[in-house]
Image (cartoon, rainbow, N blue to C red; front, side, top):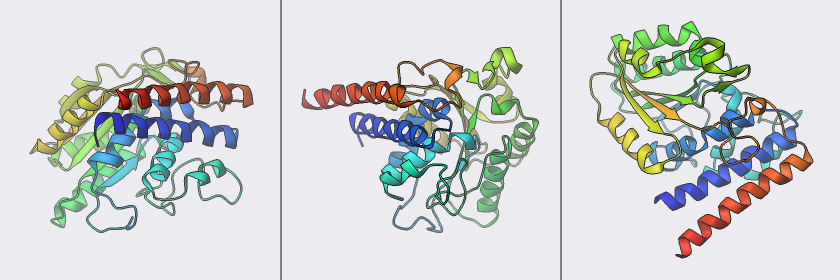
Length: 280
């Protein structure tokens, strides 16, 4: 896909996120929106996957370590063809398969997650298993910058670096905000890059909303041998929705009907701008 196509897909993913959370009257839009471009690049460009065969043995694996941003993953999977986009409106509803955190019964989900810090450990295990069984699939895991305040993250990172798991790509969504406010005020994890480097990771800092930068970063990660890679996404929490951007209040709050209308108008405007760019 070219960048314009990816931008359109990402905007569709954002629409799905906002619609799902609004319908559920609960959920986590802020961190889902900040990672929407990364989700889009992974599932539409980067990973070896097949929606028609979600359990393909040699598929690349993805673990959503910050499992509360499931609306972002679900919207991406739906737009990629794993299940109907219309099902996003059933998020968190009784009887729905799309619950508040990812579960492995959902097509395209490789690991149930939600307890912060644990997803990266599962991803490290998958990467080690691939090495031991001479499999060539890659493993990607997405963490929140607040999540990396968890000690288990660094235990897993120490192991991954020690075992030289170059088939592992850890992605940190560094939007600077967590549920209680700015991460640097709650419990600063900075400098994130230097910490991962100390655990024997190759580290790449990247603009999370620039597809050229994302393409270069993931290419560099694939080409890095002898050590795992950490890609630090410098992102905007709530990206794409005017009143949610850089606002910690939207970490785990659902928009009401009026706010939903404003959010969708914001995303419709972006869609029209992208359509004009395509016609130019």
